[in-house]
Image 1 (cartoon, rainbow, N blue to C red):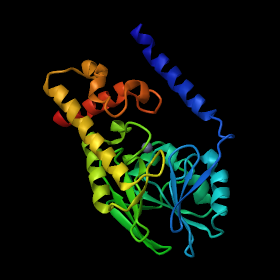
Image 2: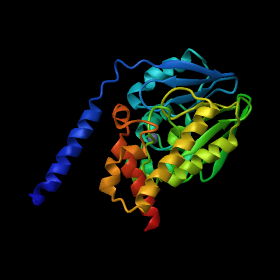
Image 3: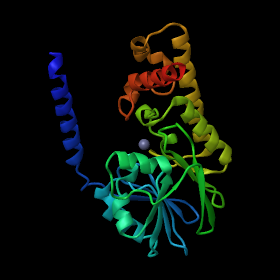
Length: 292
Ligand SMILES: [Zn+2]
């Protein structure tokens, strides 16, 4: 039986890739959500897009999927006729960077933390690699804001950046903060529960009680929503750590709904990207990796 495993795995990969390739974007509409001043959030399919429009041109954060680039551009054109000058990626995942090549072809300069470039290159995505990369942080002076891109290490991935508009007091957190369920912590791409918590703390330090937050996924949020989310991360971590300390195995922790149900029951979590067992296993694996 075991000798057939590689074939089975290959078949599965093929199936999931082709399902993804056949994904129908034709029904997706791009929704424009005013945030503050001349900053907007766009929502279609994939990660939330942040936009700053003004005399200096359009500054864009993330770009969803390549199939949506035309629709996204059309939505931007209802807000500004200026060129899309810069496109920042909050991290390397395809639902945030899929349009990089299209926007780069249209003249945008793509910028991101250096691991975004490394990981996209490793994934053989030669189109739309960031041309400006930074290790820790970078500041752009555009449209009346000193826009700060700040790397938070080993969080959702190893390539995350928070993007903050201090004058307008708006922050895009990428997927280090989402409002539609448990976090996805991509351990295979350098993420960790402790780093994700640290990213939350860093974001809260950079922001203040009046900051409007564009999360990686989900609806526009307040500072207090962000605090609640970071508290959730801390509690989830603590609950799983306590279970480990009490000698629970991975397979047991996977089924212990009470570790996570004060936030989302397993039935509720089933409706979003990360279900109950998945978040408990992920935190377990992240804590175990740290102990080894
Ligand atoms: Zn992501």
